[in-house]
Every structure is written in C-alpha cells, then in structure tokens.
Length: 149
Image (cartoon, rainbow, N blue to C red):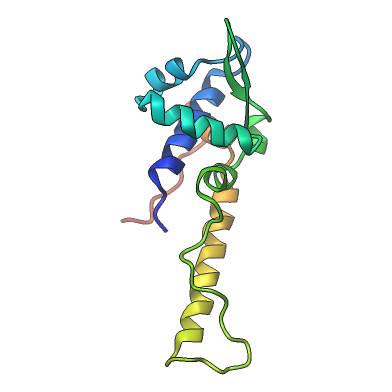
C-alpha cells in the first residue's frame, strides 16, 4: 500500500491542529497551509472530507476555522487515512476461496497473504494516535524504529 497524497496531507493537517491545540480557538485553513506547507485549495477539500468523517469541526465567519472534533488520543492514523482514502487494503483482490478450489495456480494462497498484510497495516496505523505523534514531535516519546536498515 502506498499512502496517498490526500492521506499524507490529511495527517499533516490534523497533526498541525493537534500540535497547536484548540485553546486559542479555531485555526484557519490559511494558517494550517502556512504551517504545513500544503496547498490551500487542496487542503480545503481534505478538511471537508475530515469534517464529514467527524474528525474536525468548523466555525464560519470572523474567528472561524477548524478544530479537532475529538481529543488527539482518540484520532488514529487509520481513521485519518480511511476518512480521505476509504478502506485500508493492499488492493481490490477479493476474498480467497475457502473450499480449496482456486481458479489459478496458488492464487488463493496469495489472496490470503494480501489479506493478512492488509490487516497488519490497519493494526499498525490504528496503533498511532495524534497524541502519540505530538509526543514524538516534541521529543517526549521515541520515534518509531525504521525497518529500512
């Protein structure tokens, strides 16, 4: 799975809201765009999707903008990705046959593996909340270890 640009931007926007808290009131799209370096028109579309998923609330007019709709510890990376990209899967392969009747050589084994890997991705993304990421960004929690070594 490749995290889409929408998923990345949505995560960055919500992290910005979490880092700056809602104590000072709503944050404008322009301020979020400036802090994150994201293009404002695209960010507006993403924030609307996040609002539709119940992850942010908006206030119109003077002093308006966006705030997190829930505490940062209740918003996971998985919820953010699902809000803008839909279900977290490796692909649109369908379920494996369970009766041992594969249409093609070994296909059912691979389909089962893809389902397992997709489940692991979901589990990992559910394990990171915005609160965790805020703590990592501020040095209060260790960054995740990279498996790229």
